Length: 223
Image: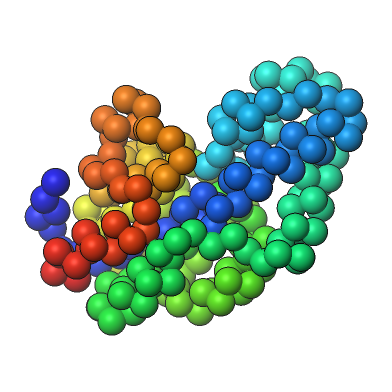
């Protein structure tokens, strides 16, 4: 794939892209459900990836019924997640620090655009030591319509005064790739866990197996 436009802004998703919190998220959702006698499958959790809290709630209730105590189970799963991170640190994806260091030397802007709420986002970014590396951070609780709607990406581009077709989006989920495509941006998929579906491949400009590969690709561009 050839990127013909200049690149003004690179947008990073957070969970699953910068941090391996999705693997941890699957484990803690299942654990939280079991503690309350509820069987939560991995496929349900995976379907909620990339969605804000309201979209995720709809996914869980669709599969587990309207009586599923989403907020109670979510609070419990966040406790399990936070306990793990406090004990072991944030699980940073391989290549993140190297990619950020490479981009620090370029004139391109960097943004975080995540469905996660502000408080948790800043805590994870600070824990990993990368919060101050980004020019702007926009979170799921700061937009009206979460991914797969494009609002969060468009808000970032507007705040940085960047044209949408000069924005690259790094994502790991179908919902994020759909949002980037709707925003008329350049969606790049970083998927180290499983082969992407045909649906996501159709919308993705290029697919990578790691952030190291993304860095090497950016080396070929005039950033």
